Length: 103
Picture 1 (cartoon, helix red, strand yellow):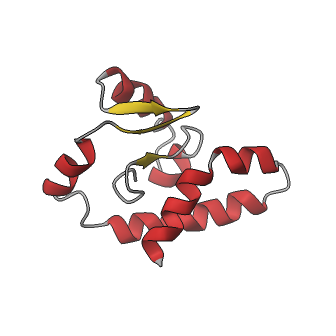
Picture 2 (cartoon, rainbow, N blue to C red):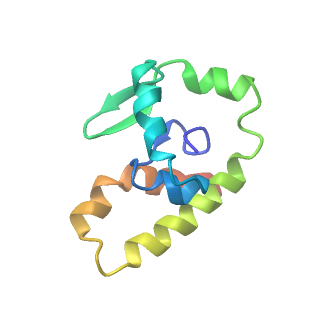
């Protein structure tokens, strides 16, 4: 999903829903531990050069589908009554990135 979102990495709480794996949130720590992610405030982005390598390896082939899935997920999530404006703002870079791919 980070390739589809231009390098933005969704918060780990969203990863299981996005990829359909209940343990997907653990991957964030593994990727960060391998220096494939860089901290960007309270969230992560793909580390410098990683996005280009993933695109070259063909990971962008399904980017539009992944972006649409992310946009649909975030539309549902932001409309949920338990999601505060502050939580939506914290995830806004990934939300905007998912929509930008679709425009």
